[in-house]
Image (cartoon, rainbow, N blue to C red; front, side, top):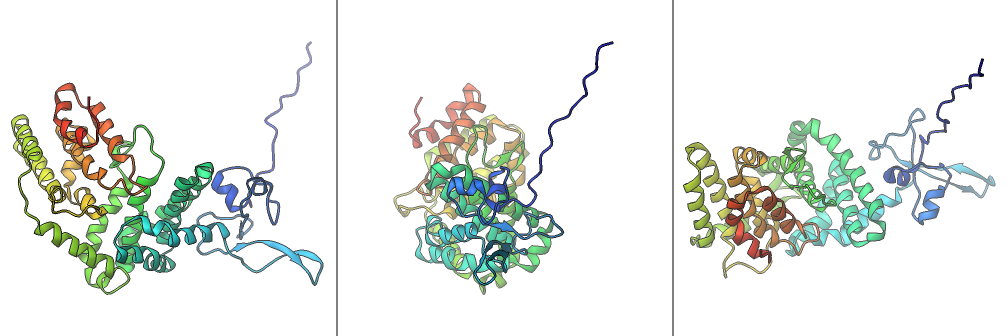
Length: 385
C-alpha cells in the first residue's frame, strides 16, 4: 500500500496586530519594531504606534486614543514606554493644510482665512471634520509628491473612511448638535471625492449605480444652512456664509440674457420629450443651470468660485438625478452642459481634468443622434470631432 503523505496547510505566520499607523495606512505587514519599524526606515518616514486597548488597537479611535512611542530613559539606562506622544504624520497633514491646501479652495482672501484658521478650529471639536481636513491634505500631498502618491492616498482613505463611519449613522443627531462641524465635513467630502484618483468609469455624481455619498452629504448641507442659519451666522462659519450670500446676490443681479446655446437645447428637449411630467423635470434642471450660466458674460469676474458651479448639483431635483442615474439621453445631455461650468474651476488642483473626463463618458453613453446635442460643450472644452 502506498504511503499516504500528511496533509499540510498553509504555513502560519504571526499576524501584526499592533503595527504602526504608517504600515496600516499602506496596508502592509509591520514588524512592530520600535521606535521605528523596518518599513518606515526603508521609506524614510516617521513611525508612530496606536495605544492599545485590551491588546487590540482600533484604527477608528485615533481621536480618543493617544499615540505612544518608545525611547531610551537616560536615568534607567533602558528603553521604556513613555507618556502619550503626537502622531507626527497627522501633524504633517494638518501643517500642510494650513500652509498650503487651505489656499487652493478659493482666491478670495477671507475664504482662504476661513480654511486656514477657522476650519481647523471647528475640527478640534468635531473629530470627523478634522479627519476630513487631514484627508484632503493627504490628497493634496499625493498630487504634489507623485513618488509618494500611494502612501498619501492610503492616508486620505483611512481618515475619510473613519469620518464617514462616524457621520453616516448619526447625521440627523449631529446636524442638531454640531451644524458647523457637519457643514464643514460635507463641504470637504465634496472636495475629497473630486480629488481622489479617477477611474475610467467614474461619473462624479454616481458610484456603482447609486447617487454618490458625497452628493448626499453635499445636498444635505443645503438643509443644514437653511435650518441652522442663525447659529451658523454667529459662529466660525459666519464669514464664509456671508461671502456666499453676497456671491448669490451678485449672480442674481446680473442680466439673465437668453443664451443661444441654452435656447437651442431647450428647443431640442421640447421637441423630443412627450411626457409632460418628464419634460418639466428636464426644463427645471435647465432653469437651475441658468443660475450658473448667468456668469457666462463679459460682466463676470475672471475667476469663478466653487459656489458658482456647484449651485447646480445642490439645487437640481431628486427626480432629475434619478433620470440621470438611469442614463436617459436628455438627462445625459443636460449633464454635458454642466461640464463647461466645471471647466471654469480647473485652476483648482482637485477639479482639474474632471470636465473632459465627464464629457467623454457622456459622449460614450449617447447614441449618434444625441451626440450632436453636446457639440457646444465639446467646443468649449477644445474637443472637436
